[in-house]
Image: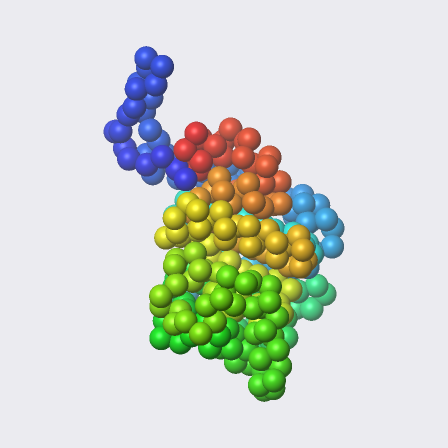
Length: 286
């Protein structure tokens, strides 16, 4: 992410390069945000027929407004990564989609159906959107199988829950081998796999993934992104993620959005944003 620390410097090729302070990044990012992308540009990135769309969304918590007239579009089987400085509103976008914020204006649609004010359980049950939290959300004293069963808590048919659990265990032998073990003894990567797998029980079409790499060793980060890649390209899931490792997130995603102060400052293909000198300098530590 951004290089922080006012007054810090480093020796580079015989010259002293002064690192950008947090305030410097904020000022320069605000200038970029002032010439942010147009709605039609964002729609084009999504292929013109988005599975999930946000238009003119204004939202926040209590009386605090975090997002200001946000637009977002992502198509079927596409992935979109949100990057930006701390406090830019990245996780608030996910919270708003799922129903955890106060929405003051704008709309959220799944296909042609508006879902702006549905409750989180209705977003999961009817809109088929699942949210994978950044915090460790497994139940450590329950077995792997019991954790997966909890993913079907909205289903009234226990047999349907068992069948869904078996489908997930068939897909991920690593979990099947540990189905009767307590989730608390799993490695960090296995717990993240369990969290993702539990979200699949309701067979969602879209996954909201908050900080998939947070707290993981490098070998597990690659495993988790491999799982997300499989869900996108083999199962056709639409994925919107927030990722602290901006380089990793943009390498993974079809589309990247840079958020600054609750607005979309930049948007483009993930690989294009990786090469964008402004993005590299302000957000990738280049």
